[in-house]
Image 1 (cartoon, rainbow, N blue to C red):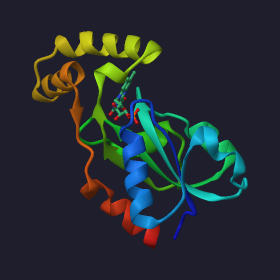
Image 2: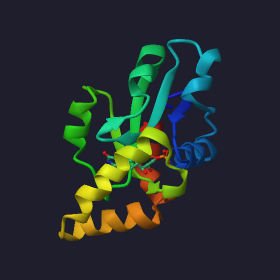
Image 3: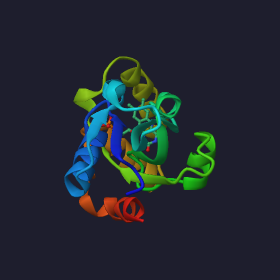
Image 4: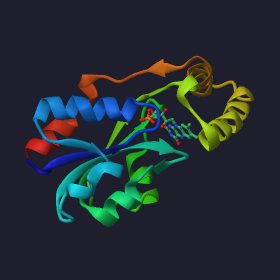
Length: 159
Ligand SMILES: Cc1cc2nc3c(=O)[nH]c(=O)nc-3n(C[C@H](O)[C@H](O)[C@H](O)COP(=O)(O)O)c2cc1C
């Protein structure tokens, strides 16, 4: 195993679902980033964080505290430009996986809700199919969490 624990940050639960699925499949311990106090500093971990405006939430803190060996970014887009995501989040050689999570409007709070209201406005002015489907998800909610998406992550963990 390339990691000895799974650590995550989740605001509305989709990243937590992926972390739990990985825990069940690998038997690796799982915990939220705020609860990693008992993990030794050099523990190699797989870190999962949700995406906010292209940033992987909690990643900086995770890298300051633990040996982040691999990263999963969870977002609502159908796919991500992995190279850009890696560059924008300064991952350098750390392997990155994109997982499509979901969107739960009722669970989005505070600053996140305000940011998304601005995004909704931008999306409602667009007519391309991708923006239309993103707008539907933002308004009605969506859940794309699937076991299949974890296959590359499980292969990497096993390597
Ligand atoms: C303020 C805000 C900004 C977001 N920015 C992005 C983004 O840049 N790219 C993306 O794919 N998803 C984006 N999302 C969608 C979330 O990443 C998505 O809902 C994710 O599944 C949330 O995970 P969680 O349930 O673990 O918090 C954004 C959501 C919010 C509320």
